[in-house]
Image 1 (spheres, helix red, strand yellow):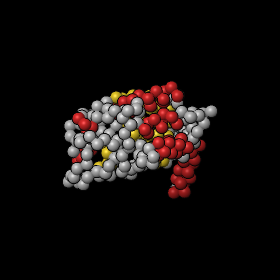
Image 2: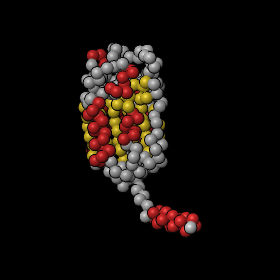
Image 3: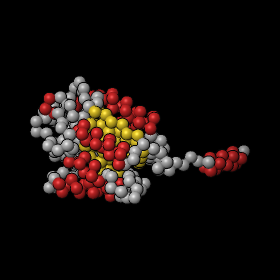
Image 4: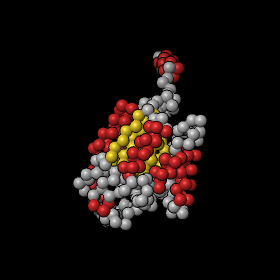
Length: 267
């Protein structure tokens, strides 16, 4: 009868609930992927990005105690996508803390944010979906894990008066804004994300050509290893640091759906 079926279904559901797999944040490994690209063609070359990625790699490995840290320098699109998928398939587990760091050129076009790799065959904005790596791809690949916190830090959108390669130009579908836009799409409710940008959406980050690192990465390296501080407090300190150092001309920006209490370095 229908009542017997309903009772059986209820009992079955109850038994599944009792044995439900319920991973907790912190039960997985701490893993990171750091990417830096300096050698863009022509006048679009950047001075700090490889140093940024190298120093973030060293920080994650030596000061934050990550279990696995991968470093890519001057990578093309395929290398970046393969590294992300290797991270997904080999290193990330339910309950992991994941860092993704990219230092290089980044743009927004038609509501999609892109990181620009090396070896792009076309720099036309309408070809970005084929030639560049979207931030949506990163969030999609990292989203299928339960109780995982993903920290995506994008040190992009550098102001460069001599850069003629990635300037905005009118296309059939409109033109991009300066730097990244605000369109970061959620990918389900299993994983939690914090996405940090070097500057406000639609703005550009100031150059720091004579220093080893960009202004944003300098602040990341200074504040991320501070013991006992929650992630959201750390990001706020970074924002204030950069804002003050640039005399209120550059303000880092975050979007977050993190619900865990993430402390990178315990007391």
